[in-house]
Amino acid sequence: MTHIPKLRRKRMRSRHQNGWVEERGGSVKRWYGHYYVYQKDEHGKETRRHKGIYLGDKAQLRKWEATNRLREIITAASKFHPRPDSLTLEWFTRERFLPMRQAKWAPSTRETNLYHLDRHIMPALGETPLRDLEKFRCQMFLNQLAEQGFSFTVVDHCRTMLKAVLEEALDAELISRNPARKLDNPQTGEPDKPVLPKWQARQILEALPFRDRLIAMIAAFCAMRPGEIFGLRWSSWRKDHFQVEGTAWRGVFREGKAKTKGSKAPVVIPDVLIPLVQMWRDQSRDAAPDQLMFPSEKGTPMRPENWLRRRIKPIATTAGISVPVNFQVLRRTFATNAQGHGNPKDVQSHLRHSDIGTTLNEYTQAIPESVRKLVNAVAHDVMTSEEEVVVERVQ
Image (tube, rainbow, N blue to C red; front, side):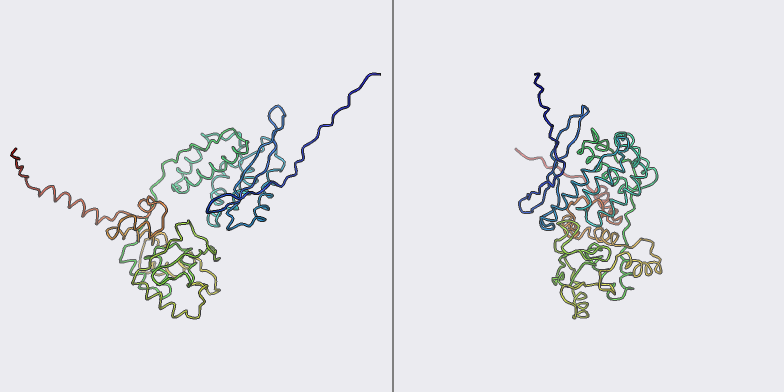
């Protein structure tokens, strides 16, 4: 009797997994998630690959929340892939990139990133299969944005977003290289960085009612961002300085949030402003320390765009002021007027910029009067100099 060997049943690996969460970090603890992805090579051989991903800071995310976030990522990563020719940039961005990245974006960052994706990147490149995206096509996309008159900020943001999306696709092994990794920013028009003349700034301040004048003076002299101003609570006022305890965004107070870590540095209040803040406190003496300094009628944070439109724009229009008066202009005006009164590091400290280059290149504008004074002084020194008498030293 012929012996027939038993066929060994090949055990199939279960695809169900929850992954695991790990705590890392020194002074700042963070949650990281781990899981596996299973892929087949061109010969049909299946391989297992480990994936590690940042989930969030421990101070802002409990472990069970980090675990749920990891499971959502695993679920998204386990979805059935469409045909290779359907793996478009838009599919990958909507199905993979955004579900993983959006969770750690601040609301303002999320709004900006989604705007550029929806407004610029997807209409131009969204339907392109990932495997057909090449450096030339990506560069031409940026060049066309510049030709259409978009600013450096818009072009650079699109470049950064496109690079980030494709870097994630590379990490997922859907493409062999990132075609956006070495893109160049094309030449764009010089951005307009207006500064409000001193006399016009004073004209606006004197025309405002007390509360609005106080808000405008904090913007002009404390150089605070709008989200910081409308997020000020009475507990934020420390007599000679403000302490940023949170920021406002779209009418919602965000406890403990700030643009950067350095943004939480104390903000100096000029002496001329301190008694005015005290007067406003006296008028608001019934307000608890955790209440907003400048609440809306509903008690929520005011929206900067509404305040500018209702309070500042009518006065500027009546006065014939052509400079668009907004919070960015007021911060830039302060940085410009600070020239000659302190060194660049002092200005950087007050504006709470992490990079002094931002202070000097983006906010501090040249003052024609000071430049002319400098040039005249040098020219006068040279043209009025007399011949120096050289005294020969006796050995």
